[in-house]
Length: 335
Image 1 (cartoon, rainbow, N blue to C red):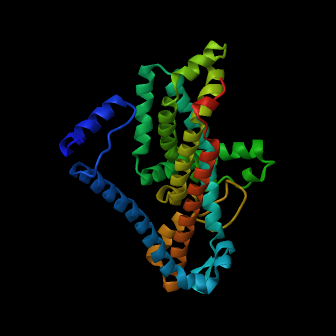
Image 2: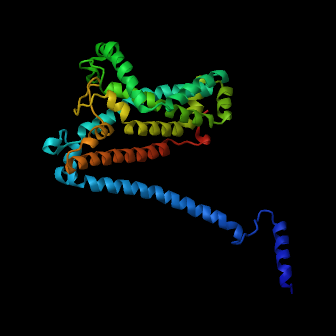
Image 3: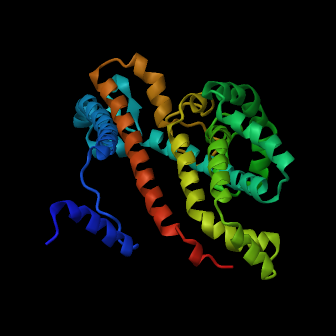
């Protein structure tokens, strides 16, 4: 019979004879820092959820009287906003937010993907460094500077000759009709496109850099041109990441305030034409909150904040679903 002191040696010898078997680790003092770190990260993660829940709770508490006075359905679908008569309808602001964000994505997405492909697939190293600095610089410019530039430079250019040209060429579409005043959905969409372009471009560049070089080499070895290799090998692999970058850019466009306020025209109307002035959720909150005349007016503005929060949440949910549907592993990429 073996003595108790010989048991650990026997177990060590058995573990040495079985290399695939890992020795069992007991709950020693070495695991205490790991457990403390895991608890700290859990607390921080729950803290983020708690802060979001507190924001929603406070907004709902302030917005309660206005929603109860107007009704949730009438508040969301109504088109009249008149604080003097306590009539509040948020539809023009929701419409303006969605339209300007959609215009910005339509303009920024092709340019961002083109820049990312050029800098990762075609440009020599010297050119990459030259282009990378302006892209990073655009991300650091304050939004009020974008607004001033849009007001004094972009709006006059849109007023003449861009909007008259678009009206003459595409006037058959209701999106390009009306007086070319410069201020409106188109100006706000262009400003937002410039602001979100660095975000989409930078993340797309990082995503494209993760594509294995073997995919490109395999496509070229099979006789594909450079564009065919990008289209058939690079894009399918990076599709989910580029889509996630687009959703992040769209999230910033939805919440932008100062620049949009200065060029959108601040008119609470719903019109199909991109030349028409409009309004957005962040803009009306910024313009009216300091001058809110009563609890109902303040509550209505808080309800607009809740609507903006809800739109952001829905956007994140849609982004996760789209990324999950479009995600493809390397084994499923066609060469």
